[in-house]
Amino acid sequence: QVQLVESGGGLVQAGGSLRLSCAASGRTLSSYAMGWFRQAPGKEREFVASITWSRSIAYYADFVKGRFTISRDNAKNTVYLQMNSLKPEDTAVYYCAARGDSITIKIRVWEYDYWGQGTQVTVSS
Image 1 (tube, one colour):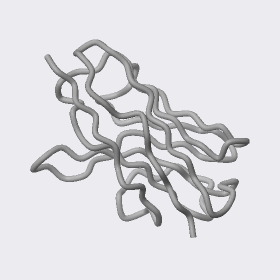
Image 2 (tube, one colour):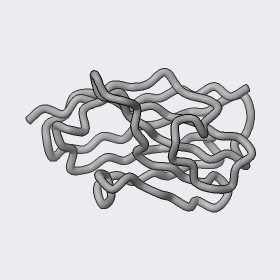
Image 3 (cartoon, helix red, strand yellow):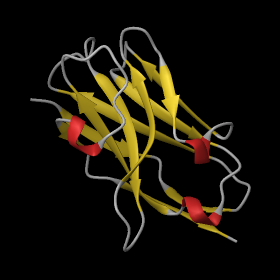
Image 4 (spheres, rainbow, N blue to C red):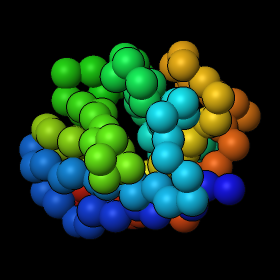
């Protein structure tokens, strides 16, 4: 079993930055794919970014390319999402997710086994 806890959300003005963290416990994530998703009110949960644990291969949704960066710290069993140049449309609850026994990128909600509780990101105009 894997537990994921997100932190780092908050209120920021458009153009600002936030760094989200996802701390994992329960087991080491050496063979896990990790992802960030977001869900705005009234909308479906959507893919933001994913990273492989062992190879650090990253993949992004088009709407965050060049603005967001996903990374991981193996020693801390933590994944990060650095978000720069934030826009009001980035406002959502951001979720961390983990998929076991995977060395490839995963971009679909159903591909993930474990989810965090989410952290709210609000970008004001």
